[in-house]
Length: 182
Image 1 (spheres, helix red, strand yellow):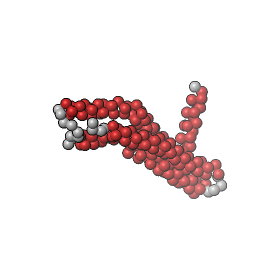
Image 2 (cartoon, rainbow, N blue to C red):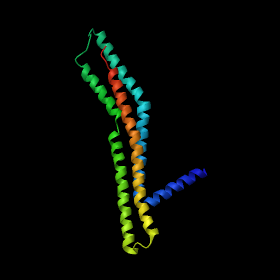
Image 3 (cartoon, rainbow, N blue to C red):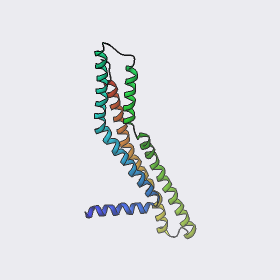
Image 4 (cartoon, one colour):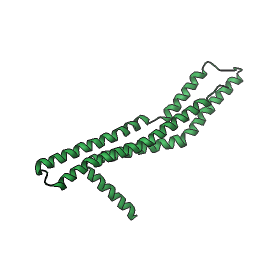
């Protein structure tokens, strides 16, 4: 329990050292990872039952056509197949544009923190001159910490996002191959 308290205190000090922009980066990071966890859960656990439902509907339709004596491909089959693939693609790629936007926002927020920290450094130089290195160091750390945080957030999100995107493409490809006419 003491280790958790120490970790929370270290994160709190890190956020305060980076300035107000760090709160925005933290909020974006929380939203980003909530969406990543939701997409991971859906892609790895929830998509398969949904896919099985669509495949069962497709097979029932094929069996019904066979019972009616219609052999081969019916004229509606390509349209129904494409609609099912479209539903699967929408389900798999839900929130991907938002995830992509959040990943792109992180470094920009870091850059905003850099600019605001440098403004603070210039204010210190204007008021106190260059004779007080402690005040300068405070502004410089406020300039570099948000940059670091924004880049780390973006890189961690990009790594997982690219894996989710690749997995969804594989699942969609497999699903479209399973929708065949008997």
